[in-house]
Image 1 (cartoon, rainbow, N blue to C red):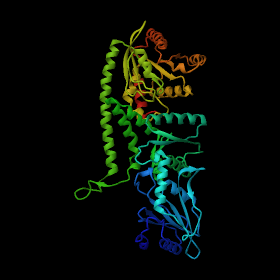
Image 2 (tube, one colour; image 1 turned 135 degrees about the horizontal axis):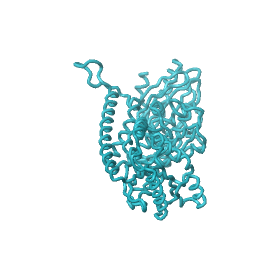
Image 3 (cartoon, rainbow, N blue to C red; image 1 turned 180 degrees about the vertical axis):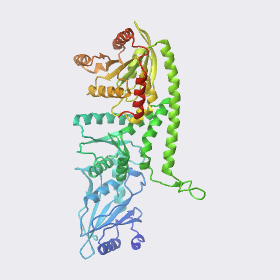
Image 4 (cartoon, rainbow, N blue to C red; image 1 turned 135 degrees about the vertical axis):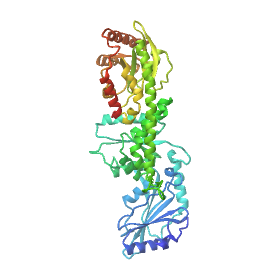
Length: 550
């Protein structure tokens, strides 16, 4: 093999005749495929020895501009029995973004017979990502390698904005793998698309698959996963975002196949929370959720087991870097938890003062982006941020509200709910969600324009039940009714026994004031406004918050 490493290929050649002859002879003698990874300067970077029908390409470092350009190396390898390029060859060409893929056909006498060449297409044509050349003899093969590769790369970057050099693109393909019915899968995918949009990532495509069973390592199955990765590379996407939570083993398995960044739904939500957190308590809760999520995944993301604190004067091999990272994460989690306990005590003192003044507390709950903050502003005249995007509010916001025939109340706005709210997030936001426990009335705000309001209501009610808040009296409010026909709004209000409003139109929220006044007066007559939360309720809340909500 030293004969191969010592040789250099001219930059205008894919491979020299002499080098091809040596590879063919060695391959014929050993009955094994032999491959050469050659860079653009003509240096042989690696010599690969396979078996009689395939060879395994080693992990290639992310060089040059990573995924945005061609790899910068070409693969020249032998094929026994003068076989053409295989499907695996073309898949490796697309997945690794090699400059060229060439197979040298070895004849029955051990001589070079035909050569087979393929390269990537700047844009897919008729579903194909690669172009195969007609087989020809090595002596009759003519190609200026350097000029061809540079022209191909320039065309790739010209025709695809996601592959342009120096352009910071955040482009993703969404992947939905579920056994649910088609309408439900599409609804979940649309929700993920909105979450990703808020994270400032452009969605270039989406894929829905309904398998009989999820693959334990790749989720999709290896063949389908490779197809998705090739599609991502063709469109310039650098993210694969799954509409489900991935196990550490699945993240590791997918990362072995591709250099694309892999995210699951929980990571997207955590990233949004990190963007939205502005107060100290919000940042602490988000960091705590992130650490709890990452802790069991450290072993998959860190493969360096360098030994620390070992050697002379210490017993045993020392502490691995993985163990050090885990210990630091656990220490940080304990410090953050202690800080949240201190904040919880401070808020408890504030609640005690309100209790002594006998001021009723009303909390706004609902699915994210249902319009809770907008309703708070409309009722109280405040200027709380209320943009039309998910998870706009993370911190608890309390305002005083005067209601005729009732007097002053405290109106609070809390974080919105979403389906499959990450367990680590619920546990970390224990301090914020605890505010709901002391509410006399919950105003459940529902987006009337959503395609499936029943699903949103079910999600919110389920989370409230698991937290132990299902016994708190609730008033349902259908928001954004101006976007629906009047007869449909009337039917929905009758069906859900709800108040229909448009929070951006101040005159419609008066119906909410009147409904709250009626409910609070009734609860007051029944003696339900003070001292109705017992120890059993506290126990249920603490238990639910400690295990989270799925």
